[in-house]
Amino acid sequence: MYRSIMAIRPDALPTDPSALTEMVLALDAENEKLRVAMQTLKEMIFGKRSERLAVLVDEQLALELGDLETDATLPVQANDDVPAAKPPGKVRKKARRNIGALPKHLPRCEQVLEPEATACLCCQGQLHKIGEDVSEVLDIIPAILRVLRTIRPKYGCRSCTDGVVQVKALPRLIESGMASTALVTHVVVSKFAWYLPLYRQVQILAGQGVNLDRATLAGWVKRAAWWLKSLYELQLRTIQASPRVFCDETPMPVLDPGRHRTRICQFWAHAMDDRPWGGPSPPAVAYVFADGRGTEEIAGQLTDFSGILQVDGYAA
Image (tube, rainbow, N blue to C red; front, top):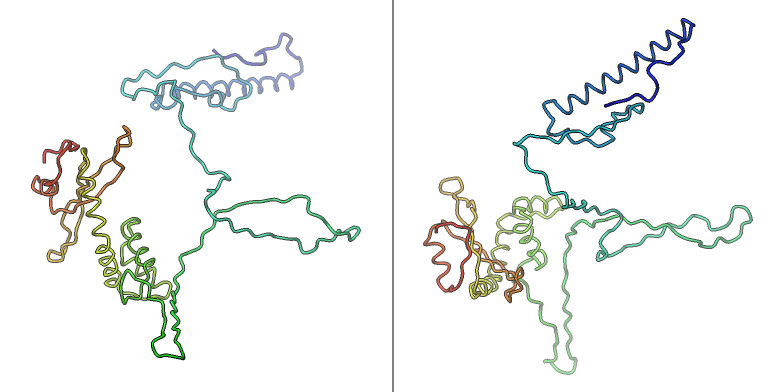
């Protein structure tokens, strides 16, 4: 199976004792390398972890022994309890790595670093640009809290008393409140899209010198929900008007102040999506809160629905 590159014993042995001693030591070292290589290969093939090491690449088989060559083919693992290998025709997709290709839709902020002097050190002549090196890094501007001042000038006529002109005030999400629509939207999105509780947002705002109570942020969220209620009801009616609706429930822990713990309620998802087969219905999903996951809960939600209901096999 294995052969050594150099001959084990030359035809003519030297008569010098020192040369013979050197030859014996070299052969002993060579035998030790072969013994270690054979022992390692036996452990790889017949050891306890043969399932992992049965298939070896050339670099592994060499074991960093440059004086060995091999033509052997290792046996295929014969364990019946290991999962079947993937078909050879299926090529594994390469990992997607962003190497030097930042998204093009992001704005570019350029900074040009010019040398202190543009005169030649030899002849003091004016240097001219022959090229440039450009590098890009991903940068971020942290969220900045600011005060948005709205000024509405008043204009009056000096000739009469009824000629005062002033632009009407812009509508706000929270009338007479001190929070802009953008701030309320940020709080709502942070809570429901990025799972950032209100008390954490209060701490973040306090870190920037703005002290607010959690109840204030809760009032903002409640007001935003009031504005979005009509849109939510329209979306739910549109979904249930589709001939095919998918429905499923997921547990939702809800605080129960009376018992000082949480109780398990349900979020029922009503969804439609005809994209896989080119249907007319656009993708949409709406969630309905319920105290349980029984038949009466879902039956009450689908009172006006008539069509195909796709479920995951739940008997309710």
